Image (cartoon, rainbow, N blue to C red; front, side, top):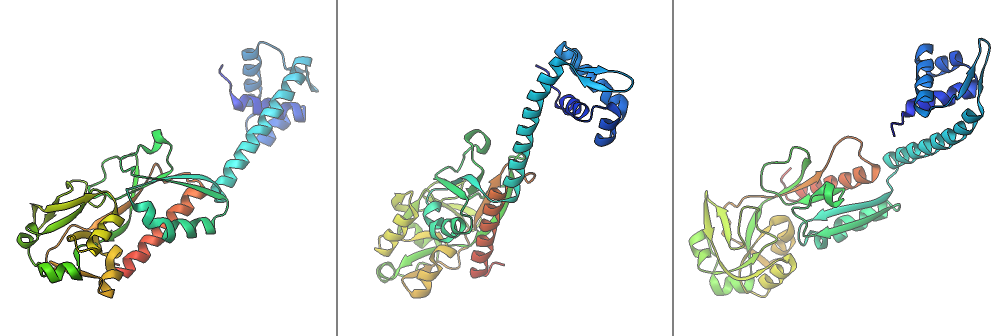
Length: 305
């Protein structure tokens, strides 16, 4: 069915004002346009909606009944527009977020709690391990991605919110046993705690890119949990590679030691990925603002901005 909402809107206005001229003036369009739209509507429906004379315009019986349905429909459309307007202006509704493995644990207290406290009308759903999720197909509003590649999908917005140096770390116990490694060659002969979650997109779990080449490390333990990596390092089972922002406090307290500090690793980078900058609902804008603020705060701590 080829429904033209503009025809219906004009018909309602003519019926309300009982005048083509007044309807044209109110809608700020030509009288001929009003007449043509109503005529096309009548032709499409196959009934006469209005009786026209030189002095008046009156509804036919069919026109009066049709007007009732049209007014209900236009009222519902107005409610829908008002609802969308409120959604744009007021942060409310359900928000679905896809995050990399382990990021939900990390963001729970630093992002999720303050976000929900600040926006009581928003419900939040966070799914881990969705690095390659299809935002549109899978129904996510936004994804948090630890990406190290250039943006490839031009239909999505990639917004970098965080960049952190990655460092080699070990426990005091480990250093006492193995010494402070200072070169890749030394590290290759020592036990490494590998993480699927912490690897770059183009790294396998036991490989690292440093000093312009690939190096294969001796992975003694491989897990997909950042918490498990940190526990293994604390127990002295091996060294690991972590973003400095996640271990700065432990290094400062002396619990962890930064080793091989002269070796430069590629930074850890976090992006927000979402479908469009235009027409963002308030709930999404609020979350983006929170994440950007978090990233800026973390980078200030890391002295990167």
